[in-house]
Amino acid sequence: MLLVPCPNCGPRNSADLRYFGESHERPNPASASPHEWRSYLYLEDNPADWLKESWFCRSGCRRYFTLERHTGTNEFRSPPMPGNKVGGKA
Image (cartoon, rainbow, N blue to C red; front, side, top):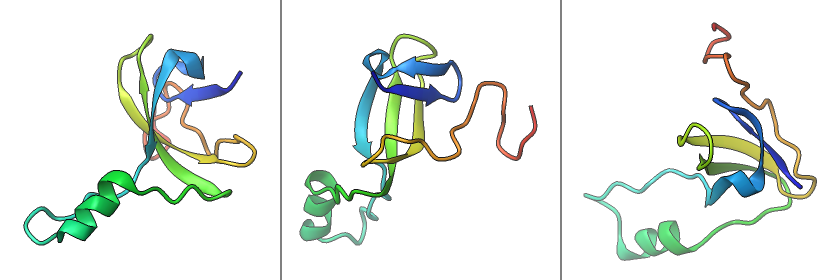
């Protein structure tokens, strides 16, 4: 079982969440080529290293959030915890 630290609900079983994959910057629609769009939509790096990922908490707060996870060890880097706001203020 993988416990994923939801920033609103706290640690949740990964079965309670929806994994959306790598979180990367969307290309500019006005200037992106078809190749850039294909790469953004269909290609993933899948390194055995730290990866920024998007998740959705479907059984708790029902919110989207982004975390950094090591794909080899499933360790989360500096996971946000409930009550902690950006900048360390609650």
